[in-house]
Amino acid sequence: MEVYVYGLAGGFLTRIVREYYHNILSGRLESNAKIEAKKELIFKILSDGDFGGMLEDSLKFAREMMDNLASSLMDAGYSIGRLDFVLLDRGLVGSGSGVFKTVFEVGMEIDKLLGLPYYPGSSLKGAARAACEDLTSDEHDEPSDSSSDSKEDDGCDKLFGSKDMAAPLVYTSAYPIGCIEDLGPCTVYLPDVITPHYYRDGKVVEAEHEAQPNPVVHLSISPGTVFSTIVGVYKHRLESVDREARRILEELSKYDSSLKEQLDASPADAVMRAGLLLLEAALMTGIGARTGKGYNTAKPLNDDRRKRLSVEVVRLSFQWPSRG
Image (cartoon, rainbow, N blue to C red; front, side, top):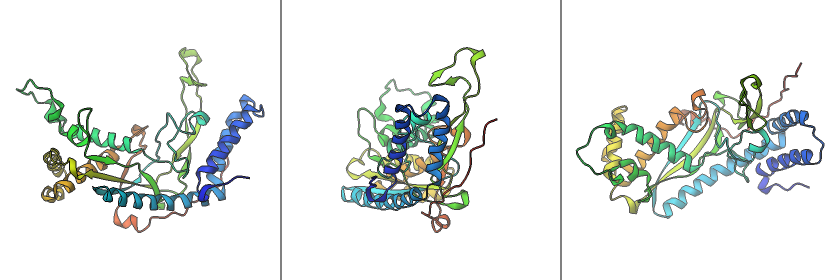
């Protein structure tokens, strides 16, 4: 008898993955049947009605979790800003790890309890830092009369930390809290495929005459899925970063004049706003895997779409194309 914690989706995913490996280890699956077994696993995830209900419960739980996390950060002395963003195309995060890596060869970061994909806070912070470095790269390229190469003079280090200093900015992991259905059906997960020619059975194909198409089915995150993250600023670490945050806001205001009013914000709000805007910039160009193909691109959720945020998960009915 299977027991699901609070009816959330993580237990369902654990069970069907366990069944897949049980069939392999017991010898029930021949090597040529593994592809069909993977397709059947994807079919269950996308069509099972019980799992759809569990995903809906998980989305509601995730929204409450983010609300509670925001309250906890404020109680701990952080100034916070919240960013809800919607995927404009498919998403894929943690492709080199996660519970599905050993099943599909392409993994995904999935919360083991909620059964939901998520973007780790460290990935979001790294993407925001990269946007900061891109924004300030022109300054770094200019010749300097100073022979000092101290990173203490690097504004991005002051905002995002280094081995010598703690960062005032923190980014929580981003969890899905619903969907915008005009960008696609609210399924959370979608079937996907890549077709490498020089990689087969976990090994690199080195001989050109041995290269051949090798379809790899896997899961990705459906467009229209809305994620929520929180950017926090620890108030006791603002002394050295307020000026850097305002400099970044000033740079960003060159592209959006409405941001000039942020230059008069309090130190905590200026740093928090800089952290949010840098993450927004990173999301527009894409973070994580396959950004060159449009994956993981997102934009902030506007008020109009926020009114249409849904947690009603759609189940799909489909058949895989037969071979031959």
